[in-house]
Amino acid sequence: MAQGLGSVLFDNSGLQMGLFRGQTDLDDSGLNYSFRLYSQQVFDAYRFGELSISSGALSGLGYRSQLTPLEYRLGYRLSKFGMPEPRLFGIKSSIYAYGGLGILYHRPLEILAPDDPLTAEMGIGLPTSSFWDFNGGIAPFIPVGTGFEIPLEQNVWLNISVGYNQSLSVLKFNSHDVPGGYWNFSIGLRFKRSSPQKISIHPAPVKEFQRKPIPWVPVKVEAVQPVDITSIVLDKLNSRIINFDILSSTPDEKGLEWIEEMAQLLNRYPTESLQVFGHADSIGTEAVNLMISESRARAIWLALIDAGVNPERLGYNWYSDDRPKKSNSTSEGRSENRRVEFRTVSAGMKYLQHPRAQEVYLASIFADLEYDKPLLQPRDIDFNQSMLGLDDYSSMIIKLVSYLMHSESDIKLVVLSQAGARSGTDLRRSLSKARAEKIRVELILKGIAPERVQAVSPESDLYDKYKHHLKGSSQQNILIPVQSTPNSGGGE
Image (cartoon, rainbow, N blue to C red):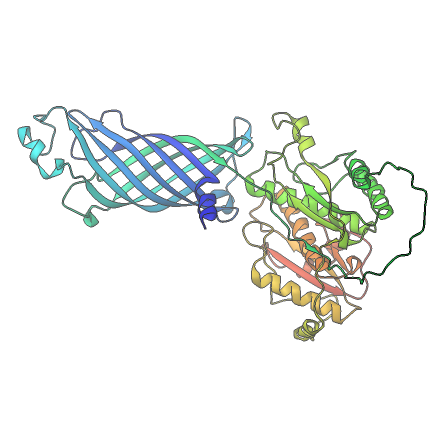
């Protein structure tokens, strides 16, 4: 529990310094400043929350007081609604808006001129008035505003925001006054401590054998230097880097040829299990970089399987832009950072999960299926706002489809995906391809033979053949049962 709380509070935190102007009965023309310490919780690609505490001074002619707001903000990145992400200093930035609720504590610190005629109480009555009671005033307030973040280095963002905080004075806790509201402008840094997403690995069961005595036979023993097969395989796999274009998860022709060679190498060492790791450069948003690095790892994972590697031996993972190979400050460095790498894992690791026999009978709900027509409509497979995350309902539907394919061995599937129209053209094409491949992978991981499922890329002949089943421009993911998998249009 303590570890989980520490992760929430410190894994994604920031510090801002701000200037503000309050709305009180006095002259607030002095230097008003504040420091804000906050912790950010990311809910998905577009939504986040921030718990923060601030402390600052509200000053003017003849007085100085302390403001301490404790607040929670709920933010939304405006790219969700189709707003383009501007480039600031040549770096793509994220614009957001926020609103929330908080508690404002206002405490006078000192009176420099008690007879200042600008005060509400006038003259020497100022120090003893209820407004200047040194117990302080407390009231709820509503913060609203907007801002943007600029990625600077790995896991470091520059955060600039402007907003207004409206006090709810009718709900104040006591008779002491608080400012009616105040404007604030803040600038600071946010830091993220991250770790790669993990895929659970289930080791194969070990069969127990009964020990039997072995007769002694004298032999001549010669010292032989052991050969580390794992190191040989890994060095060969990483001797070339498979790079990608911006927003692409498709390797070039040389990369595809190298995948064929790697498949032959892995098949020569059938005890080696392998994980593929995808990476991105720092140009895209956090959500886009997560999506594209995951897509690259999955695309190479599928390419190795299609080249003949047993999927029981393969897994994949991704790091977004958290582990650059070269500096992202140059186009050459960013090109090398858009890559996949390989790592061998312990022998015997298995990634597929075959259903139990009784689960296959659940597929009877699809008894009315027709070939060359969408399988699930009006049911939907839907991805949440993290771009490639499946909700529980969609995962259940994919599992039921795998039960159907286990029970009906002649069924093959074509998978088409359409991203929402608010994405840019390149991102929409890449996201559509990635979602189709994600569904294909989910079925393979449930024991379906890879050749029975085909993920179709946009702008291919096979996509054009079936795209009339896609209605409108909203997000859609459809599975079309066919009696034989077509050979054209499977990739870009």
